[in-house]
Image (cartoon, rainbow, N blue to C red):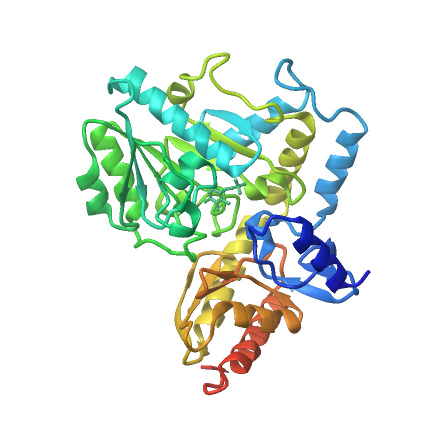
Length: 409
Ligand SMILES: *Cc1c(COP(=O)(O)O)cnc(C)c1O
C-alpha cells in the first residue's frame, strides 16, 4: 500500500479531530522517522514532546522488553515490584514528597484539580463547593470536559458545555492580575510555566517566583503543569528550577512514557497528597508494572545521558540560530531549551504551508494555531541536525513567501 492508501483509510474510518500532515510514518530511530515509502525525516516535533529520548531509545525499549517477559498489568489492588522505585525517583527529581501515577496528561491534571479542591475544603477551610482555581488565558491542560471548560480557546470548547464551575481566568504572564484575582475562596493557581500549545509563550522572567510569593502570602497552592515543559525540555529537569522555586503540586506526562507508553503523574507535598484516602481516586492502568518500568528507565536515561544539559546547550544554539534568520514573515522567535516557536505573519507565510514545505524537504514540524512553527526535537538531536533543520526552514519560508528571501544575519 502507498501513503495515499493509508491516508484514505485513516480519513475514511477515523474521526476527523486532527488535521495531520500527509506523511505516513512506519518506523523511528533516534531523531529520525521513516515513511512507508522509505523516505527519512528529521523529527523536529518529538510527538509534542512525548519523544524527548528519541524514537525507540535502546535502553527504554530494553526495559520494556524485560518487563514484557514478566508481567504487564496487575492493577492497584496489589503492590508490584516495579512501582515504588519509579515513584521514589520521580519524587527525588522533582523535590516533592509523594507521587500519584496516572496515564495521560489530562488525568494528571484532573488529579491535581481534585487534590486542590479537597485540600482547600478540608485543610484551608473553604466551604464545600466554593473552591476556585485560577488559571491563565491561553492555557492547555488537556481535553476532558472539566479542563476544556476553563480553556480560552473556542475550538476546544465550542458545543461541549455545560462546563464545571470553579475556575477563574487571568492573562498569562501577568503576576499582578493573578494577585488581584485571589480571594478567600482561592484553592490553587494552576499554570504552565511556558504555554506550549498556545505557541510556546514564555512569561516574563520572575513570573513563577512572583506566583510562588502570591501563593505563600495567601495560603494558596501553586500547581505547575509541566507535562510538556518538564523532564528536560526547557534545559532544566523542571522549568520551575529556572526560577529556584518549588511548586506545591506538579503534573508530569508526555516524555515520562519514554516515547513508548502513556505515563503521567501528579506529585505534591505530603500534606496535600494526604487528602486522598483509599477509594477517593484511582486509575485501572495508572502505575502498572510495564508503565513503571518504562518510566523509570526514561528517568534514568535522562540523567545518565545528561539529556537535560544537552537540551540547555543545544537549546541556546537553536534559539540563537533561529533568531538570526532574517525574513519578512517572521514576527517572533521565543523559547527555552530545545523548545522554540517561530511566529509567522499568516498573511505572508501560513505556518501549515511552511510545515508542508519542510516536510517535502525531509524535516517534520507542525503548525500551532496557524501562525507558529514549532522546533521541539528529541533531546538526542545533534547540532548538525539542528543546523540542517534551520536551513530547511529557511528554504521552506522562501518557497512559501518568495517575496522575501530568507537569509542568515
Ligand atoms: C499535552 C499536555 C496535556 C495533556 O496531555 P494528554 O496526555 O494529551 O492528556 C496537559 N498539559 C500540558 C501542558 C500539555 O502540554
